[in-house]
Image 1: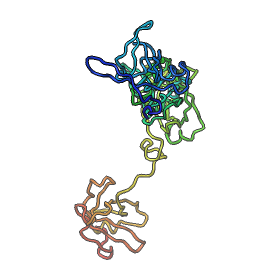
Image 2: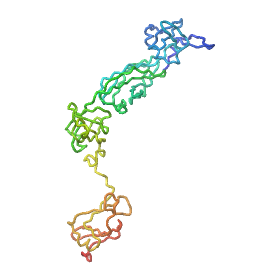
Image 3: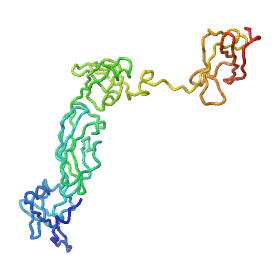
Image 4: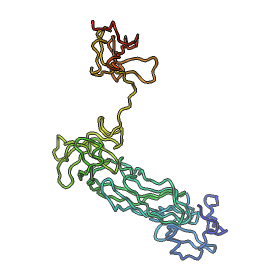
Length: 385
C-alpha cells in the first residue's frame, strides 16, 4: 500500500535545481499534532506551508535511517544540524524492528522475541531474524509473508526453526542476533543482541542392548549436551549434574524420534560419544533389532530330505525322519532355477534330491547346473547302491 491521495495536498512545492524543477509533495496535517506526526513518520522537523507540511530529518540521525535515499528532495536547511526534506513529504518510511530478547537461552530450546512495527502507510512484506557467523545470515524461520500497514506485532522464533543446525554452536558460546523487517521502501535492522547459550539437559530412554526397547523403556537418563544438533555422530554426552559418562547402550530421544548408540569416550572418561543413530521406526533400527520387520523373501524354498549323486542311494537312504534341507528358487522367474543359498548366487551340487512324502512315497528330482533334468517316484530299482 502506498501513501493514499487523501493524505496529500493537491498542491506541491516546486524547487529549481540545475535548471530542473523538482517537485515535493505536501502532506495534509489531518488534525494531528506536530509531535504525533513526527513520531509516526520518524521526522525531526516539520516544514509548514499554507497547504500542509513537508517532513525533514537530520542527516545521519536516528530518524534519517527510516527513509529511503531516493525520497530525499533538494531542500536543505540548517537548524542545529543539516536537515534534508523529502519529496514524498516524509510519509513513506521503513518499518521498525526492536532489539530482540531471548526468554529461553538453553541449547535446543532457544527462543527469540522481537517487537516489529509496520510503517503507517506501507505493508510489511517480510520479517525475521538473522544470526552472525562471520556475516549476517538468515535464520530458517524467516517469514516469507508480511503484515498490514500501521500494525505492531511480536515475532517469536524457536530454535527448531532458527537455523541452529547451521551454527554448530555449543553451550557457553556467545551468539549475536538481530531482527529485521522489510517493506517496499527497504529493510530496517534492529540493534544486535548478544547472549550466552546454556547447555541442554535432556531426558533419554535407555536399553543396554536393543534400540527399539529404548523407545518404550522406563529406564530414563538425564543427559547433559553442549553441542547442537543433538546426537550427530561424535557428539559428546555425560550425566547431567554428575559430570561423568553415561552407560554404554542404546538411547532414545523422543523430541526428534531418534535412537542412538552411545559408548564411553576412550579419550575422556567424563564423556560418552554417539557412535551411530537413526530414526526410531520399523526398518530403521540397527540390523537384527526386533523392532525391524522380518526380511522380505524374494525366493521360494524347495524342501528335500536326502541328496546323493546316485539315484539308488538318494532314494534308499531317505526317510521321513531325515533332516530337512532346502534349495531356493527366485520368485517370478521362469524357468525354475535352483540355488543352494538365499543369496541366489551359488548353484547346488549336481545329483538327486529326494523328498519323503510319507513312509511309502518318495519323489526324486535330478538337478544339474541348477536345472531340473528329470523327476519321478522312487520305487523298485532304486535301492542303495
